Image (tube, rainbow, N blue to C red):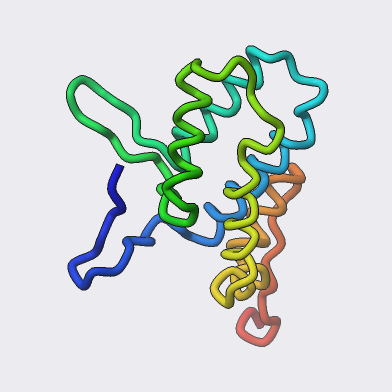
Length: 146
């Protein structure tokens, strides 16, 4: 699977929005947190769902469909090949550290300025409210409302 390269030779990061980065981090953290209490078959399903949602292409007919949120370029190709190997069934079990490189890389992207500004945005506020199942908070200035 080759990297998506923009016309200027840069990696296409259009779908690497701060909310997608946070969603990836939460998926990886949940996988690790629930590893010890999840049956092996369910671990494989969860690992495959994460892999094909964020890192690996899906084969649909004769075409390769890129992941919904394409983050494959944040990790080395060797990590992607190992992930493919494990998910192909050639590995007997899903290792606990399967997504370790992926998690380290996403943490690095979460410490950049675009994500830090997202944390103080209205979008993040709405996302937190949705995750908590509460009404979103919007700070409206009083003067324009009067």
